[in-house]
Image (cartoon, rainbow, N blue to C red):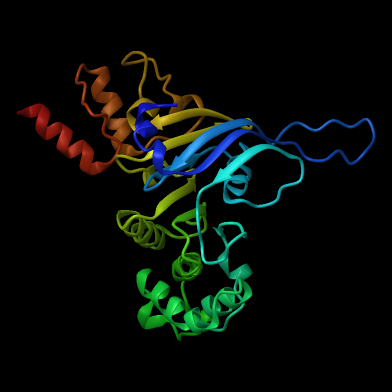
Length: 290
C-alpha cells in the first residue's frame, strides 16, 4: 500500500480484499476466466481516483463491486464505510448514456422520482432534488424538458441524482466518452468542483487528458491492477529514450504536454514534477529557465 494514501487510512471509505469475479459456468465442463482477479485496494475519503484501462480490462466490474452491486461469481470481501440516504443500497454509478435510465420529464422530476424509488423521507425529497441540481449548475434548467438538454447536461442530471442520495462518493464510468470536447470539459469541471468540496471521486476513463495533478491513478489490465500511484510514476521511463513507461506499455496515448516533456528529456532537459498538462508544462519550463 503506497505512501500516497497511508496517511488517510483512518478515513477509509471502501476496502476491497482479494476480490475476484468469475462469470458463472453455463455449460458443464466449460471454464471461464475471471473478469477481475485478486483485487485488494483501499479508497479513502476525499481522493480523486482516475481508474484507467482499455476496453475489457475489468475497470467497470471493479467499480460495480466497490459500489456494492451484487455480481454473479464474486468472491472476496468489500468493506464499505459509507452512509447514504438510501441505506443498504449500492452507490449509484453514472454511466455513458444517462438518458437510458431517466424516468422524469424534467431534471427536477427525474431526481425526485429517483429519490422516491429509493424511499427517502417524503418531506425531504423536493429540497434535496433542488439542492442537488443547484450544485451541478442546473438550477435554472431544473424544469426544462429533458429532451431539450445537451448530452453534457443530461450527465449532470444523473450526477445530481447521486448527490441527492447524499452519497459522499461518486462513481462515474466514462461519462465523457460520448460527449464533444466542450461538453466533456464542462462535465469534468463540475465534478472537479464537487471533489474540491469534499466528495470522493472514482473517475473511470481512457482519456489521459482528463488527468490532473494530484490524482491517484489506478490502472487495470487483464482483470488485475497493474499500477496504483501518482502520475509522475505513471509517465516515468527507465531512461530518456526507453519509451517504456507504464502509460506506453498499456497502449495509452499520452497528453500532448507529456509527449513534449518526453522529447525534452531526450534532449537532456528533465522537468520535475513531470508535466502532463499544459499548465504544468508551462510552469515547469518557466522554473527550469530560471
